[in-house]
Length: 137
Image 1 (cartoon, rainbow, N blue to C red):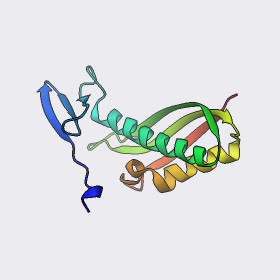
Image 2 (image 1 turned 180 degrees about the vertical axis):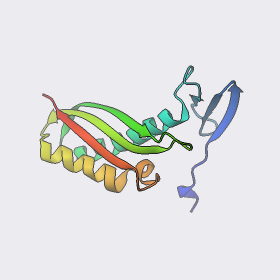
Image 3 (image 1 turned 45 degrees about the horizontal axis):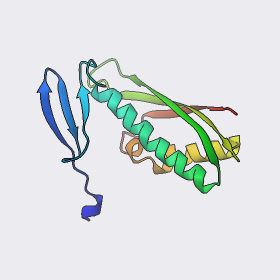
Image 4 (image 1 turned 30 degrees about the vertical axis):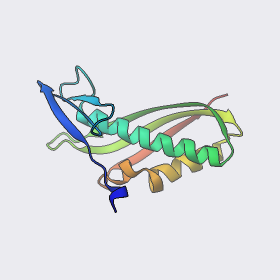
């Protein structure tokens, strides 16, 4: 059971800045003012992108793709009223690699976004999640 437990610690750094992460390991700065680091909502997008990215790379490796390029931008549209949560999230993904084709790329992305990305799947299921794919050589 403890293998499934995750713990993070944060410490206030002044203003709206917090430094945190896994106790005793490298830390990140979250700045609600967005000056000294990403704000919490952008950090959530980064977490979703990192999670989905790890899934996609892992799946493509299993498909025997020799990945040479992976770039991702993620954007979220927030509600106008508080709590101003995300209403939609869109990933823009650019991939290249030996043995990569559109079918494999879309399969890997679809599996990540609908089945494996624990960050996305921890969010409210009414958030519309979409992606755009660009394959390069």
